Image (cartoon, rainbow, N blue to C red):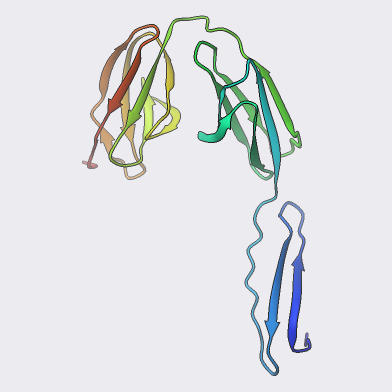
Length: 186
């Protein structure tokens, strides 16, 4: 369809996507292509805990600040929220695409078993596995709370590279820092 030369506003709306508005300058006698990407719609969710000052992770990524805080949740996918605070049991909460909640509130329970904390870093980004299970953390990590006792910590990346397994014996209340190196894929 032909439009008059000059500035025009293009607005797009589509269910499940964020509205987009662009200003387009059309020159006389020329066609103008408008390339628009419509991001997934999202909403803001506040997160609070009792007691507060807990760390929040959304899909394994740290949310800025400690509770009370907020996060932006994409509406078209499943999400996992993990809440952690030293001395308390971690909480894992799932969010479904159809959830439209705007507030999450959790009561933290004191730890039921002795725990320690590890941090893990590497020269490149890698997933952290403890006892063969992906922790949901990528390097460099903040504190990962683990039950006291023996564990095997390993790094893996998307190319198939792995670190040598590190065997640790974590004591109650201990804070341990590990630096692991990835080996090239065999």
